[in-house]
Length: 172
Image 1 (cartoon, helix red, strand yellow):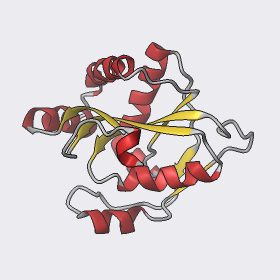
Image 2 (image 1 turned 135 degrees about the horizontal axis):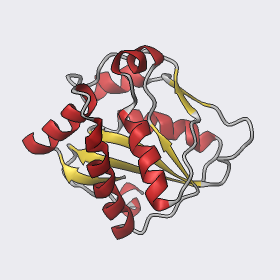
Image 3 (image 1 turned 180 degrees about the vertical axis):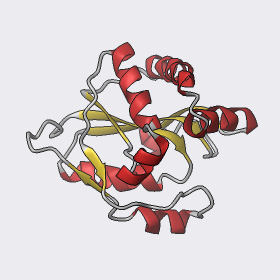
Image 4 (image 1 turned 90 degrees about the horizontal axis):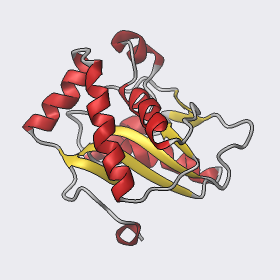
C-alpha cells in the first residue's frame, strides 16, 4: 500500500473539489504526484486497475475519479489499464462509517471480470483516491488473490493511515 500524501485540510479540498465540484482538471496534478511516487518506489506492474463506482453513483457524478486517475497514470507510466472490476452493490458513502461498518458495507460489493485470464500471475496496481481503513481495497484484493494475481500494489493519492507508506514486510 503506497499513498502519496497525508489527508489534511488542503489535500481534502483538492480531492473533494475534484470529485464533487467537477474540477476534473485537478486530475493532472494528482497524476503528477502519483507518477513521482511511482518512480520513487520503483513500482513494477503488468496492469493498472481501479476501484469502480456503482452505475447509479457514476451516472450521478458523471465520472469515476479513480478511473480517470488510472487512465492518465497509464499514459505517463506506459502500463495498460484493465476495466475488470465491477461494483455490483450500490454501497452508501463510507465517509462517516467506522472500520467495522465500512467492512460490512463493502462486503460482496465487487466482482472481477477476467474471462481471458489476463490477470493470472500478473502484478497489478489498484488505484483509489483515498486510503482510510483499507476496507474497499482489501475486499477487491481478496477477489484478485483468488485468480490468483502475483502481486497487488495499492496506490492512492491520500491516506488517513498513520504512515504514508506501508511496506510488504510490515504487512507480513
